[in-house]
Length: 254
Picture (tube, rainbow, N blue to C red):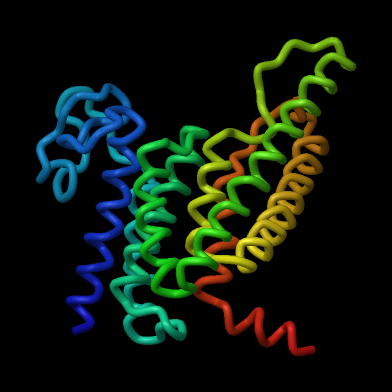
């Protein structure tokens, strides 16, 4: 059974790597392609051996191994010590979505609309199962509207700051993909869970951004309007509330 669970984790990790490689390039599910030259690859050489492009010789990145190792660990955890009310298959499906969004956003600063649409269907089904219709729809609407307001306010702030400094920039504080992702997570967390999710994401994002700014300033590499992907913080907060809910319930009792 351990071998089966490890193999399932590896396959799911390979699926996340495939989606993260193919969707930003093709916007559709096709044969695997090289992330460097976009040349199509055979499935065996892509997944098993030699894991390098036959056209340009590009090796697959360290991210491939990290994702697969992480999903093997997640698979073992969800099978042998699952969170309360989180069946193994449900947990793995959610983790595929979370992993795909995180990797693409970190590498491309994108949250793709097809991924958000798939997440909406997944979130609606999961939310109906966990929270019921009213809480699910309220959570989705609250997540979308709250992040939309932050998106609009962030855009105004960036334009005002750029004008104040006499700079030209096309950077944005938040991308619209963060808005749609918040709606998806709202469906999953329901209402009022999405309120806690957004607050936690803002705290995580603020702490990491502050640390990043301090480090770059100390190293003399600070650059104004440096984009920081926000999707991973939203995902991290959702994972915390969906998979480690007992910890937060315990903290709230103090």
